[in-house]
Length: 256
Image (cartoon, rainbow, N blue to C red):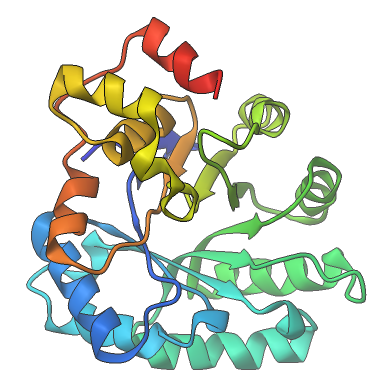
């Protein structure tokens, strides 16, 4: 497993996205992922699957401290009291004393960013949150979050795949030592039939999806969290660390 290293933190570059899995399906997927070598699991209050993920981690032979767990505050829970109460429920559901990364799931114009960030900093001080970040933030919103926080904003989690240009946001993140976490990296399945990606993949005996994931991870400060539930797809998504795209191949994918 490769890592994104910044601010003294090593984050597994490939994680498991879990939306919209719930219940037994989610538990089985996370359990299988951990067995296959995944060490980064992404969830959120909105997904209603934190309990399923907690059960999978508890049942796994992998130590909790070896799993990088991310969850997110629902945009309706960004007021101080709501954030504190809902986050405690998240910990209870996950069956853990801390999360590695807590994100604001999406901006809420009705709640000052300073109020939410202050609560997240408090949780860091108390030890129940290791790192904080945001999701679906524009550059301006990210700048406001950085200004409000006493600690670094570790990541901005956004939709990013070969059909979505994120060059301006990514440049800003790199300039400020922030990771960009790509969700929906396979464009809701559209990637699987892309001829350019398939042609590139044939050189390495890889699928179009594997090429798309590799393209993301060869970009500085980028991690990704593809969703998968079957053992076959979980194995396919993690089997991307034994090849490297050339600069020319990277450019062909950027051109998409």
